[in-house]
Length: 348
Image 1 (cartoon, rainbow, N blue to C red):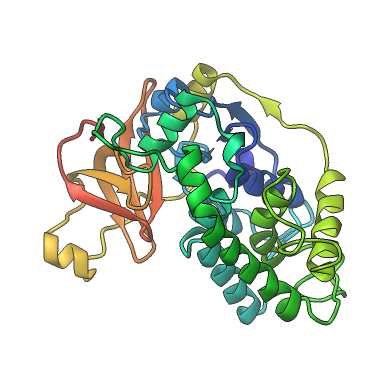
Image 2 (image 1 turned 180 degrees about the vertical axis):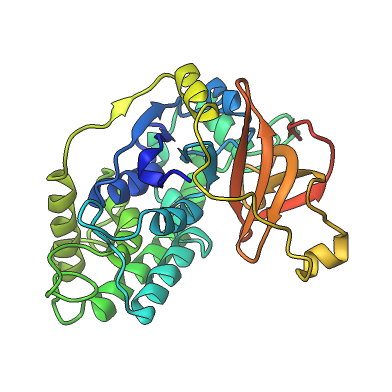
């Protein structure tokens, strides 16, 4: 079986995506080489469809012939497939408590509502393109054809959401200012570290994104004087990532799809369906069944269809057919769902 480092890695992203930037930082901090396939910020994305993927969220990452969805799972897989080495220095601490803290911060940000609150802090006038507003309404599951429907990214909605969102962000900043960074340490896991850890990355990326957005946060929520320790920590992190290495190569969509379909798999074996899993027992899932898979929080109208290969405690794996061959598509159990269905991808 080929080592993951011998396989092509392609990051599908669009400019200004904070989720994608989180992955770029991870890859570059760990010196993992990759190529980029740049995508438009709105649908359609024929490059992703060429892989055999209906999932509409960005980013996604391919390693060889495996396609990984959701940044939570992507980082977990990179941690496993690229163990710390001289070539790929680790970001994670070997301490189980530190590993748990990184997971908790990730869950709080992605699943716990912190990122959604951050998105609601975008100044109302910054989003004015009707096509973008419509696209993001569809991403959120809002049918704009329905009478009286309001996009959550309309100026009216954004103004109404902002006060509550600012309260959430203020609490997150205070958690760092008065808690994890209270003693003035340079990094969350201590000043003895030579640079940021995975804990820092999971804690900083949303605040870094907002801090760089004019008008997003008032100074009393995040500022050099009001929250000096958090401000200095973000500045320190920003200095590190700005000093990272060279620019990755880019690959066009059709070329990327051919490269992925022609590569070997990153993971040995297809995996198995856990016969003792409560959902498997209740719904009768079996390896090889035709299923559909989708995220349950947003982007749920776009559903991938294929053959069920694995269903474990933390992951779904299905096989889908792309333009140039089949791939294995991996998604986390948390925040995703599967159901028995036909083998045709759908938009509900």
